[in-house]
Length: 360
Figure (cartoon, rainbow, N blue to C red):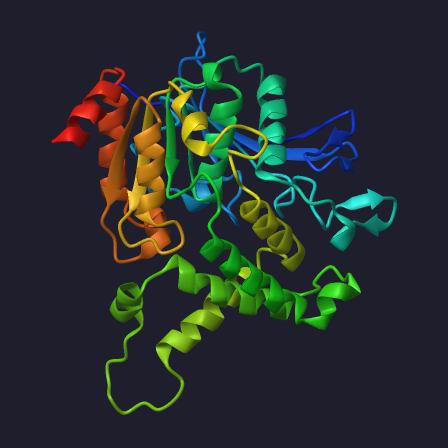
């Protein structure tokens, strides 16, 4: 009889012994980066899977992406060494707005603006600390997908495969508008500017309710929140659901991190300071599985089509879902099938194949 080793996730922190200069030129003094490893690193480092988390996610992959990661799942810690880092400005252990900038004083709104590139800089320092020289698969969705693209542009030789999911090369005016509406809700809560640990809580609840409308779809609400009777005139399920989602986030997150992280999402643009996005992508030869969701209003499928079209060695997989952007947290069977096919397929430059397909 054979037994598979069971691995438990291991959490740790890394505090940099130097100040971190951000893309804006601002300085973040000796930041802390919280991270998690799960599984065992092979001697030849051929089994590293690096996960970039989404907006309010964290480094504890088993808590929010358990449909993909875990025993007998797509990425099993018995086979892979899974690494994830809580990004700067977040609320799960890395230096963020509620961290102390000196003895007895928290940052709050004096925290500097961080960018996706700053987040990637933090990932890179954790990688160097862990002594990882190559990464088998880099995967992330939404803001995590933005990190995937940015890191692969900066260090294409580091990654054997990348899987950007439901993401884009530049955040859209529509996405920025949704984020600004959420920030306005937070700023409308006067406690946000009182710099209290729980400041902006009511605003965060409202912001999350706004955000949910961009993460889901008309059809999804019809499937899950429709009433079973025609007699109601108030106290609707959909209304309760919005309040529930807002409260749920407020119980585990904070308004300051949410405000700063949405700003980072807005500023994402792989072309900033470089060539146009199509040319930047064309220089990345890494085999890529680009995943989009057909009902995603926040990161519409055209954005993933653009990425797949201009990455020379990419294939596009489209998930069919009634749940919009949140489909990457729901459609695990389809996502697992696409990823497993991608991981097992031989790699080749399919630029010529694309050209043939586009000419037909």
